[in-house]
Image (cartoon, rainbow over all chains, first blue to last red; front, side, top):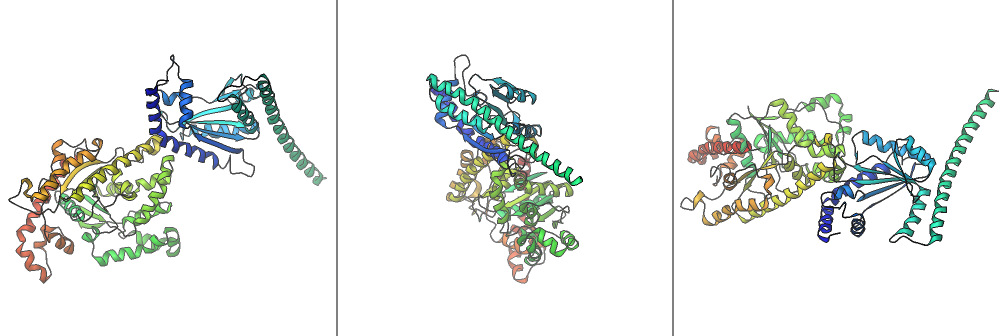
Length: 235
Length: 365
């Protein structure tokens, strides 16, 4: 990327950084303090990770994303790089995703924040694809086994200030972290590593499904024992 | 209705005398004016109330201010609270529910009558408590927190409520000479502001400080506006404050001096005021004014020259300078006032001209 343009872009990023920061903090607090998602005995949100993009990573990303057909300029920078602020919401059970999604959408409908584009779900797993489609979320199949749902939120209908919120399960996070360490800064071309990553992704999917099954079994057991106790007390 | 604030970063420039006489002159032209004393020193209040009267108001408010509204109302009962609300209150009392984060009471307590057209909302030495809340809550306004937005806009809201009831044309706010967070929200959320200046180095530095602060305050407000919803934006004023001009005040008169009848040293400083304004006060908050309006003090030389002891008489008798010769005075004041009768009476015409020039400038908002 042309250095003059890059310097100008970095300058406008820094001039908006305070506002981006404030919006980022507001969203983090929203999820961390949410009575339905976080402030319960067994919270739906397991943990939250967040970061503001640092300048060096931004420079790399600009070089990676800029191309002569579709150059990044000062004018389109805030619409092209939408993850200057990022929040990752991690949850245990795949079935809990729906509640997190509904909470994000309800705030959107209330005008508390706005979506830059409709949410996108990335997955390779047909079971998850069905769930996401059921919630009317655009779903993209990723070759790379990446699984996550992305929302790009803004404080106003039209705004330079954006924050990317990613929602995924802890198992998906494990896969994502290992994949990241293999692929950055340079993709590993070790065949065995690639193969093992594939196995890890199946393992993650299986893990998530096992958790789901344990949760269901527990609920079913509790439901049945109540029924049995009630029946016994009637006899 | 327009809200005007009189502000200088330097104290002792006769700001309160100017504020009182300006408001009085406007009321004599037939404008309805409310004075709000937001300087904790409360000097403006003493133009409208005797020490004993303000003492009584403060004393009755003490438990509300010190222990808080909720516990005090519980102690004295709704009926007594209602009775208290029908007597004049200070601006701090009216801000207190917002300070505590509780609901407002519905009654607007009566104002102090200065004359038919001129009313006063008294001040209180405890205003720093509200200022603390502004500082603590400021950052939450970036996330649209309702209480912090209310805290920032409450002074403006109170001005509007009284204006709706009394049809005020102007609300004039007297401020303390610092650049803290109380003045940040006052000056940023009023419609126009005036800088009273002395022809000295301190005033030039004061203008620099004001200009620099206004720049960063405006950035803060613009940041809030980028982050909050349209609905919440409506609680803030549409425009950031704009500049109405400066006055040179209380300078020694030197009739054989330069233009403006000022001694050379004073004249040199006075002449630097317009260029200091242009250099330090951002163009976007003074572009309403013509070049001529920025260069010359409000009202020309009307209030420029020293009033000697006249203001102290005005405050002692709680009347404008021009009325002093016509009211009953203590025996020891009688002779000196009679001797200066013409000077006292002349202030009326001068302040009238001053007020009229200001009205022209207010029309640029």
